[in-house]
Image (cartoon, rainbow, N blue to C red; front, side, top):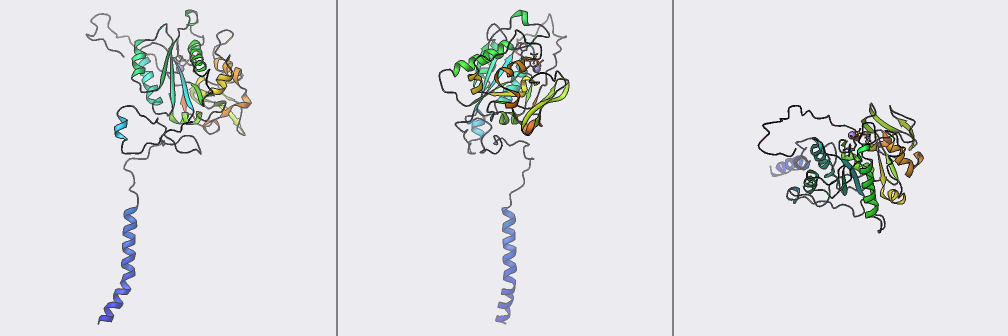
Length: 323
Ligand code: UGA
Ligand code: MN
């Protein structure tokens, strides 16, 4: 009797063990997330590089508390700084544009925003805005001469040059830190991925721009990793047929070409980008980004002119509100 019980026990034992192991394995399986994975990983910087935070190490108020329990990876000390030069001017949509831009830039590690007002003095609106933006920034201003404020003439020439001058002056006495310069107009839309792409710029990098030139996109044509032409609907004969939002320049190139600026004299409408790039690089040298210029990561969106037809002339609101 006893031996029969023993035999049964030994026959069942392996099966019991298998059931126990399977139950244990199942409970160790990671629980699938309730919410879908974000389309974009906030920790990846550049392809094939170490995983680094997209956001800066010392976050603005609020986020600090929320992230306390999670270890925050610190940015690499040598992560090149991205300098974004943004010309801006006073109009009803200005604060909305700057808010959208700041919301993007705040998520990019090691970004310095150079905001240049097209004005005779720094405005209170922009000063207050920048003070609360939670971003490393520099606030400059220079007015566009009245004679250049006409339709058909290039915009923001003086403002971009003021940004360039500030950069050159800031770095004049020290060895150039790794850095990348990018002209970020205030009405465009920027994907976070764009900043990962431009951060590895060695001299001058280029990529497609969406919603520009009367087309869904314009882009540099790339063969064997080199730019060989331009897919554009407008003046394909330009040496660099590219929008301001379609390129970035290393700080080193800006410093070693101290005379390269945007020119008023001799510059035809729409030729500013080409005229500038001609001074610092050649088409052969360009570094194609965004998967050999096959991905749109920035859009030349342009904001509709706002309708203020019903603004009151009398019986104004009892409070003065900044918009
Ligand atoms: C296109 C290009 O994308 C611009 O980079 C280029 O400067 C411009 O043409 C040009 O014609 O010069 P577009 O959308 O037509 O852009 O120009 P805006 O967005 O009106 O202006 C470009 C930048 O200059 C913006 O950041 C805007 O705020 C600023 N701006 C514009 C001024 O600072 N002052 C002005 O009087 C007008
Ligand atoms: Mn624009």
